Length: 374
Ligand SMILES: Cc1cc2nc3c(=O)[nH]c(=O)nc-3n(C[C@H](O)[C@H](O)[C@H](O)COP(=O)(O)O)c2cc1C
Image 1 (cartoon, helix red, strand yellow):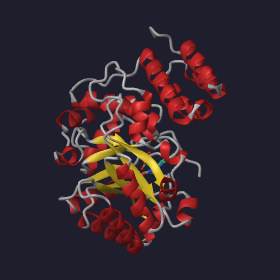
Image 2: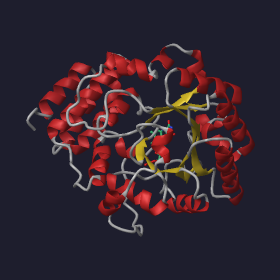
Image 3: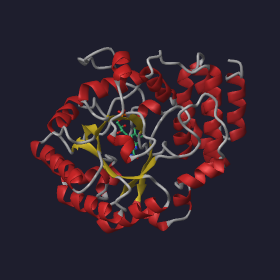
């Protein structure tokens, strides 16, 4: 499935004020840090398959992300153990990458918490066992993925498939909630519906309502349908309507968040309690710093070349520890391409990153293109 990683032209929406003014009066809903200590701002780094690993999460945290989610982890992979599980152990990652000082970071340490482990699977029993394992591994929240639109996932009755099978979805949600100790919040990731048919909107509502009834702390709703995948725009109007009709519930929103202004636009327009930052934070951890700057009433700071260098070098080192030299060299390419967008010579940097394979090559290009005093 090809996914567009660059923003579509922005949609004009009627907001109550300019994003900087919305930001200045924005406060996190007190229920959120009460549920998840440390989740102190109304935005977070989303689950992003192939991206939101320990390396991306740690870089995001050092730039102000208060909460992060793993990519969707298959219940089977978790239960089988081995390498697949090892690289998802948040405490091991934090201890292996070290807990050094990070400049200009007032809000986060290199501790990968609070963090949600996201589980995806088919059978309630297996999902429940994998969810419990996530708790034992030290995750602070268990997030259940009922949203993934990838065909292979849907066809094996996982992820977004459940949005057209509400009874099955509810069985999974119940099994997970029962297995996870009551002190650990369970949450769910949904899309706004399977497709635009009215019966599918009804199926969504059944799952959404039941989730809260059986004790889920919040639902994150992506404003696209499963069938829509990543095409077109997310329907923020549907999120707004949902929040208005279910005003007592914590609802988080997702879809078309490309810059810090979008975070505050979604909070204002939809009334959601927190915003999931997904494609907009790939190679752009500064989106979190900008959002915090705006909440503090300051102009958002753009990253200097020296800050870009620091973030890239940190990302490289974390990736190397987590994935090993060879794999990290390849994995960094998709991040490097996105990081290069901040550089005044973006095309040259992008081209140089595309050529990189080994970590030594990565470091050499970073040294050359991002001078220390840049
Ligand atoms: C490459 C990619 C991988 C994704 N993987 C996950 C995932 O593992 N878990 C999840 O809950 N959502 C996943 N998503 C969905 C995002 O979290 C988010 O809901 C979606 O991209 C809409 O937000 P955006 O338009 O601001 O990017 C993924 C999206 C992309 C583009």
